[in-house]
Amino acid sequence: GWINTMDSTSNVRGSSFIIATVSGACNTLVTAPCCANAKIATFTGPGTFCVSSASGCSANNVVSYVVVAGGAGGGTNGSGGGGAGGFREVESPVTPYAASPLDGYPSSPNRITVSATAFPIVVGGGGTAASPPSATKGGSGNPSTFSSITSAGGGGGGSRSASPKCGIAGGSGGGAGGGCSSGNTGGAGNTPPTSPSQGFPGGNSGGGTGTHAGGGGGGAGVAGALAPGGCSVAGGAGGAGVSSAITSSIVARAGGGGGSGRLSPGSSPGGSGGTGGGGAGASGPSNAVSGTPNTGGGGGGAEFTGVSAGGGGSGIVVIRYR
Image: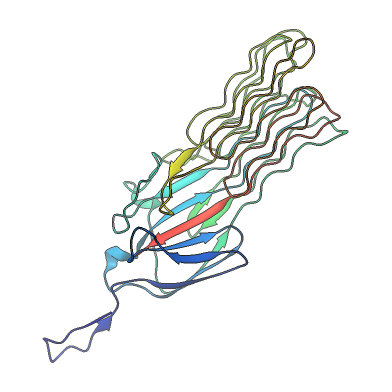
């Protein structure tokens, strides 16, 4: 800390740094490997970021953060992949690192200036996977929250047996289900809207008799891919997430889940999961892959009603401060 020694009329004392603790099972507080003056609080579940003393320098009280919501589950029976959880980030100039393209620091409403108080942290769980014997859409993910910042859960993947067959809107949208002569639409991303955008829409499915392939779930960096119309086609790939080095290591998060493929006739695979924790879609009697925990990745869609889709990956909250 510091004390004014040159002015005998002043007794002001203070610290140049934020002093804080974290609570909650499995949540951690460490010194950044790249900078002795930076701390990293990581929340993989609910907890509290408790600031016992703010910095005497007001600029140092603007913290960096990444807030990722839970990804969505994929649907069953010719289904779309789950959308990734919304991704929001601010890189404060006092704790520089390689931020994602979604750095919202230039817009002042995105900045969080901490004071000596407790900040409850919410980490969204992943959406449920559609599972046998039902033929339904995937469950949407749950939001994550830090102070005034909320990231929306990913939108569930659509199903060719659900009505409507489209994907669900969310932080990133769910991919569309197949099974319509005119095709179906993926769910909208960035819902509710933020600036920068917290995610992209899910992929559409093409039209055609017997279409089972589903669109890919949207990711934080790219929309989910289209599943072409027709019988023997691969599922749409999940949209890619974005990478940030807020933890001092470059990590990709918030990738969309892949849509289901069509096994018969033909042997077309499910769509690949988006970079950043998205699960791959499946074709035929195979189960789809779930999103990776604590990335907000969407789950993959399944082709048949007798197999399981992938569930969404849980979210994460990371706070970096001086």
